[in-house]
Image (cartoon, rainbow, N blue to C red; front, side):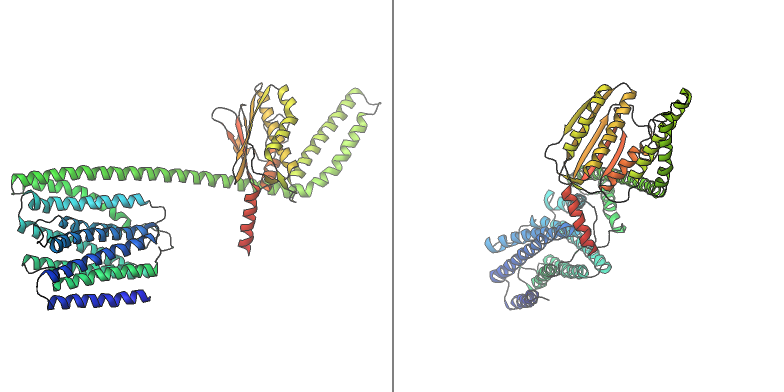
Length: 585
């Protein structure tokens, strides 16, 4: 326990004892009234300040919790300021009815809202505006109860004995509900929050007892400010201030365990339902069973209708927010499923490529030896003058197929290469410019128009310029072949990015991809036999993976296909490597 708290406890005990001693020593009069009112006002103002500072020093639901308690203390202070103004400055008794009674009644509602926040639990993604809406609905319902039960006999048609009795009963119910909630929280929590809840329960319990004793004394016309009854009240407020000081010292946080839906989370909707259903029931009772004057009945029916309208708006607003939150969660769930499917596809693709690489690594060199001999002998046969034209043609076909097989094996070897390539800083926009310039004549000859939007001053990426150049050429050649099938079209190339990634897009207006999910599979091709091996995009996929980048493709709604390559920037790779190094240490 800090020296500050020890000092406050000593001061609180001394002040409470002194208040009781003065109440016994001094008769009823201006001196004891002034001491009682000003002491109560200063203590409540201090409670407001302490809880407000505690709210500022915290965050999230803990801040909201103490902010609501501070709001309650502020309303309490305003009520006491009214008492002080009338009794100390005007030297008059409080008017009956007194407007401060409404403020005193309402000041318990923020405390109820604070308890419903349950700041000891991790709230996850729960939005604070739901808590705000719950607080507004709770406030409206208690104001309705006051306006329906007490206000008519207080201001519409004055009946002091009726409204005072009803006020005392309803105020007691309000405080008992608060105490029950605090006791439940204190019983079901542990650690620092358990101490805070128990201390709040004790402080408000003492106050509830003091309040009921005061109200009974007021009914017997025995109460005056500064009397012995105020000593108990002062003790309650001092205890509340001590709880705020304890919370500042302990700085309790939320339970680190993820929030699990419990019965408490269903309480606000049930309360809202009960509040809405209670309004027509009370209005029905007023219309058919109340025997008071027509003026009071009309006022209560009007209050019921207005409250039903306001609470109905709140319920619809809550439902709208819930629907919007559900849409957001569904969108996030859909995105998560898509990400999972993409990762699964990438994993399957990596497994395919890894299996193929292991196969090729062991067999490619053995295939190359007889293949070289076949190719050499076929070329020798083709140049032999003693062969007939038919035999020469067959020798050329043997050589053609041997060269095709050699290209296939070369692609497999390039794809199955296990060693990482040497990388350096690369400007992706300049690389694309070179790739397009090399294919310009070929594209123009096929009636293909090239559009490019290359971002300027893009961050550098870390990669092998030769490999990336070949990858871009491979994608451009595939797009050119697709556009050639429809007699030409447009190929668009875009680059853009930020400090985290650089994005490269290839868009064409061709017929699209027949099976986008299989486009990176080894040996998958839609080209005629002898025109493609189905290894180009597979090798491209492996190169992009080696660069810690991501490649994807899909068909566009307006027609054609799009390939998207996402490269991490050089600075991003540096930060990832530093983070991995720190993790390994």
